[in-house]
Length: 388
Ligand SMILES: Cc1cc2nc3c(=O)[nH]c(=O)nc-3n(C[C@H](O)[C@H](O)[C@H](O)COP(=O)(O)OP(=O)(O)OC[C@H]3O[C@@H](n4cnc5c(N)ncnc54)[C@H](O)[C@@H]3O)c2cc1C
Image (tube, rainbow, N blue to C red):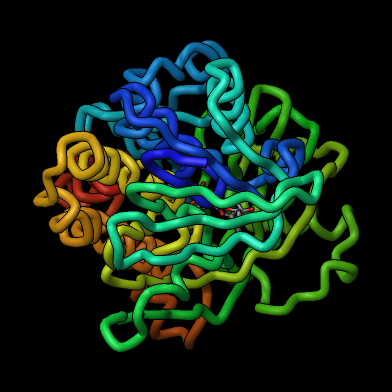
């Protein structure tokens, strides 16, 4: 088989890249080691920056998003002193959208399959070869056990944090930065209407809590817990009671409902650079991850892919390499901004350390909600910096 761009991974990064390249007349083949049902059902992100929504809309992928997604013009930041609202359009002229990653992936898979473009789910033995040549190859075994060899002009490693492509970069030139946090998130999905119109981020002496949502009927809630927390210690009653305690303010009640999914998520920041070697380019979680507090991971995958699409179009479509050469530098600027914001928001909201740290956190939260300059900076980062 021959294609211009071989794409490893059918997550948001790989699927969107294939779609944007097709709009520019560049063909690609996507290989994914999970099933279509699995990637469409994986519960993860749910908050889209304005730039992500604009990108999806301009690419013709916005119909369902605009019909079923929920535009949010702000968030609530809460401490025991009370619940404060930040008004994003008033602060920075932008909004965010609540639309599950599951739905984004569903839309992308549907668009790709409707266009009849080659996508292989449930592959195994994925390998990438000759990345330093002009003809890198991807080999894999398809779901029926047939081996394939894909000759490409370039390969995009969009295979997430646990994928294979990052390990193919030369360790002598590769630099990584990591921060592990001393807490984790216990996340639940529940069939109950959200008890709030916009997300509530709550600092509480027991630990952080977040009230998010996926639709008018489905709520997504999180509790700060210890890393390695045992989920079996958390009955439904204990989860709801702790959420009510941490999210509660006078006169407000958290509605409860059946819990349909629960998981523990570790909190880590990680950046690996350069994001390219020869004709192999990394995008999304393959190159970097952030703790979920700032809702940046999926959005960073989208911004990487927008920049990478320009670079690959010039490289394989027109034989020009300057955008490919600049890819790491351009993408990393946004990656580090989001990495800093995610770290800062995480550090401000999670209980750890002593009472001195707690007072600093509360002072910072009071500053963000009372100072115009601080709340503008927060809103600008939360709704997302410009992609280009
Ligand atoms: C609990 C949770 C909550 C989150 N909340 C948010 C949020 O609110 N906002 C936000 O922006 N982000 C959030 N994120 C982060 C977001 O989900 C990720 O950043 C996003 O999925 C990255 O997309 P990706 O395409 O780069 O990687 P992935 O989604 O991980 O996709 C990579 C794909 O590659 C496939 N793959 C791996 N190895 C191979 C191989 N060898 N061969 C073929 N295929 C392979 C995988 O199966 C997968 O489908 C959250 C994450 C978690 C875990």
